[in-house]
Length: 62
Image (cartoon, rainbow, N blue to C red; front, side, top):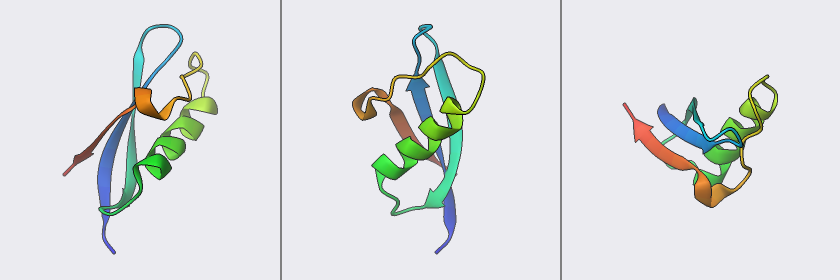
């Protein structure tokens, strides 16, 4: 299966949105994309992102 590029925007407690590029198959579960981006954000030095799936914006690109 070919990987596609997805953009996952996570709102954070500082009022900003942090956007992550996630590579996953076209039929990937949106929840899996969310958690992959959230864990990447959680390991960074940025302010804490909300861990609420419904608050994330997920779009396929490319």
